[in-house]
Image (cartoon, rainbow, N blue to C red; front, top):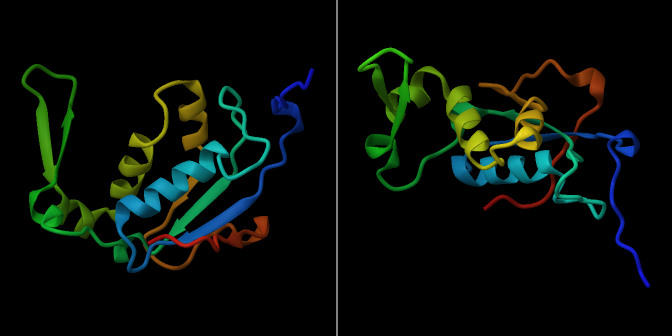
Length: 146
């Protein structure tokens, strides 16, 4: 009888990848980042173990939203106070804080459990092309993001 391989959290070696979001759709970049954070690109992927890698997303301000999403898409959040529902349109969010827009997109693509929450801690998002993780020797993510 063949047994399936199950990764153990103590055996995992994490790598660092850079994704350049310039000129690419925000959602496609977020989907690629979420997949790397979960470890789905690895042959040793195990669903219940946090076996993903670190991701650095650069040039978030140059990510594009297709169609009319820039004008129509709205992010709703609640302050915790009575009647405290707030909204922010994506044209304002992308102009003021594009890193937050990318974080929201990636967070929505990760599972809502402890694996997803710990995976999100390995995501670093930067507005421009510079990042401060050169010491980790990150590699560029070479697979195509349409």
